[in-house]
Length: 278
Image (cartoon, rainbow, N blue to C red):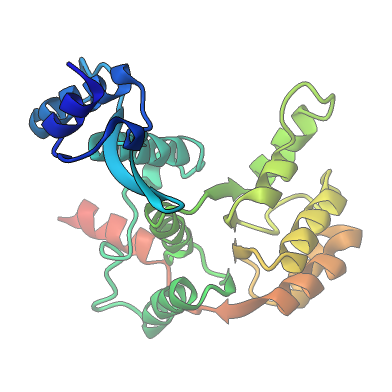
């Protein structure tokens, strides 16, 4: 079959050979792909691994030419998107207990009004892109649930997100101080969205607070969205809990994020007690 005959089979009649700027093999593949791809439901057995040849007319100066371009098919694109989504989830660090945490299953009906306030602040941050500190002296009122739901929303939107309990971040950085593995602080600097959970629960003289300040300062300078939870509601007390770097850390946090204080009670314990009674 001549080049002109192949072009006619592909649906481009009346072309002369000088108008065909493609190899014969590519034209044959484009002809085969037209039929195969119309029936395709998966990449299994695809001879082009999801990047298939497509013939089309392109303008080259005054001359219109038939060319073959290799493009990613819809099935391949969906598979690549799903692979990227799985990779983001695999590296996000959200604890197994909170993998299903969402804004939908954070039910506020019948709870303290501050629970509704926390959820509203999360929704506003998702909409506007600003950073947040969720602070409460009371444990068990849903800060971590909302923080994980926040990270989940960003992941589903295609952003890179990382959840770290602060003490675990410091421990991981200390364990890798010999340079054998990736520096978790460097990884935390680069993600689109960072969640730092339970800030201030560390020992006063814990290792790594200068690195923690460097991380927060980096994200402040680069306007990267950051969400922090803490069980120390008063900024001055939080600064004291983090030793000599505490004032610098808290000062930077107050500059970069909205500080939201909640007085909601420990509904986690209340629900546990209700289950025991039932």
